[in-house]
Image (tube, rainbow, N blue to C red; front, side, top):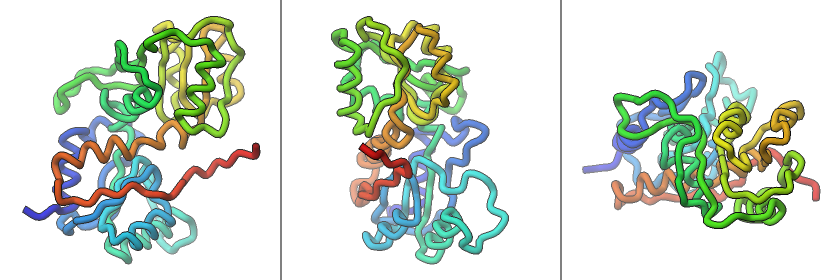
Length: 268
């Protein structure tokens, strides 16, 4: 049986249904013919123009990204911005573009589990903010994750470990609380909305991104906030997607993009 765009998307959506995504999201097949054959797929965080060019170079018929390239409706398609140019390039070169975003964020084995794995946190892992049971998905769903370090760590030691393992250019954080770290809460991407829950669950530290200046005050000395950057928190998502595909499509060539799409740069 040949592999098609549809067979790949159906498999992914069986594991991570589209109805698990947030209402504002646009996960799913964004560009492409569902019946088109696929033998090479490119995995990435952001399906930018450069990523589509990489897909063309590497003869991939499909790009699977975490972030949807089209987040809001397109009223025109004349190449006036990077979103339109990316879509035009994908269409002209018969490359399907698929996004698996907040539906992957909201599953126990998704983005946040990968962050925990990178940090070596394996004890008592739970969804930080579980939501109501979903009839089409067997398992707990919800935002963020919380777990325990095998051994407690000093704050500066912990920050150094996070910076190294997550490849962060820097870590923005609240004042040190002069206490050991044991309970760790995380949320890939913009997770400031989970701060109250992390405090309620008595996490010692909350790792996420996109905190604004005033939101740092909300820690109120109860928790250490670590903002490691949006790209940095989700850059390993392609490994999750690869694992979801590898066992079911043995003849499919799965390629990880080499393009660093992070728009944020650091002057060191």
